[in-house]
Amino acid sequence: MSRVDSEFKNRVYDYVAQIPQGRVMTYGQLAALSGAAWAAWEVGQIAHTGPADLPWQRVVNKSGGLARGYPGGFEGHKKALLVEGVEVDTEYKVQVGDLLWWPIDKDQNSLPL
DNA sequence: GGTCTGACCAGGG
DNA sequence: ACCCTGGCCAGAC
Image (cartoon, rainbow, N blue to C red):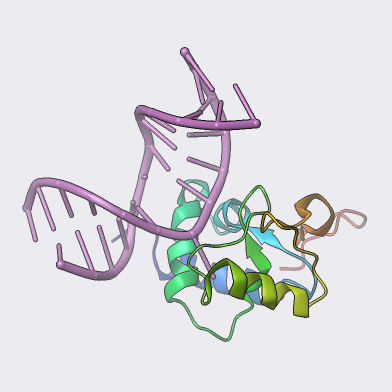
């Protein structure tokens, strides 16, 4: 069995589904939370091949950069984010420092899962 | 079966 | 700040 099994995938799906509108998460973050910190790349593949009804536009890379392979390319990704009220600069990046979502409530220090 | 690529990341030069 | 490398894995040829 592979080290990145369907369990990992399902966790990624769960986390992505829980990202609130207007916030973002990173690939590495999702990978680490799902139990495979080295599998950030896998998360990208999962995003590419996974269910289209999940808000993949809320997933960006560590620098806030958008995804090449998003349907419609950078433009498509940018548009999808703008609809949600997320500002995207001319370099196709978002302010990840302000918008990054973390499933742990920092104030209450509790886990929603 | 080997080899290459990829919606990535961290570290070193 | 840039470019390169190693890491690890799944899919496509």
